[in-house]
Amino acid sequence: MDIYAIAPIAAILDAAYGALTGLADLLAPFTGASAAAAAIILITVIIRSLLIPVGVSQARAEQTRARLAPKLREIQRRHKKNPERLQRETMQLYKDENTSPFAGCLPVLLQAPVIGILYTLFLRTEISGHPNDLLTHDLFGASLGTSLVSMLTVGPFSMPTLVVYGALIVVMIAVAEVSRRVFRPVPVDDSPLSSPGMLRMMSALHYLTAVFAVFVPLAAGLYLTVTVAWTLVQRVILRRRFPLPVSVG
Image (tube, rainbow, N blue to C red; front, side, top):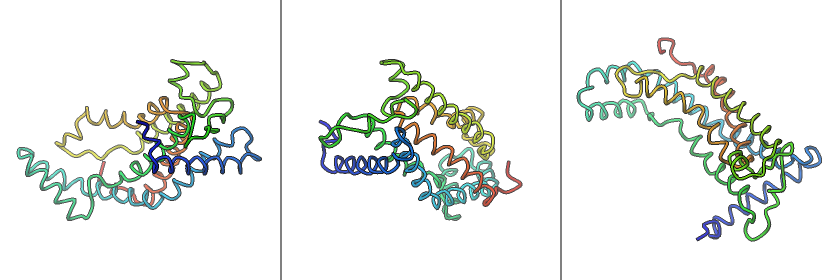
């Protein structure tokens, strides 16, 4: 069964297709063959702009978690031998502070449908029964519908695709490294989340976007690159607006 043939999903895809191709047509006089890529960048900027209030909420949540770190350490010290009491006291602390340990996850959740739609738009040869013209678009000669893994394993080999993907991955890795160094997690004594192994895993998560990008069509990889770059700049600005307590870290 083709889930994309289900009426509501097909309608969403067709609307997204129409919006993207329409925007690409508007940009074509200025961007030429890269009109669809420019449209993706513009859509990404628009989406990230709309999510700025969510980013502010995320920065406030991070500031709150840092402020609560000493209290969390004390809870860990008192109840480390009683996991149930530890969990209950921890959740009560977050409740009293009107926050959550999962606060700030909303931007990731909100962007998942966008990435899914872009992935589908540049994967299917037909959208709602008509040919998918988006697959004819490229960025500096690299097809927006081709993934790096697909090009390397299935072919055909394309040097422009390799170069463009290489540039995007370099940007994502650079952003990940800066993010890893600047935004280190606040350690909590005796917490499993502060163990060396867990901290290494959390550091590695910064590079997960670059790994994920090689498996998706270039269009989605472009969206991810602009997103991580925007996120880094936004976090730097908001960290200045909502600094962490000096005594933390």
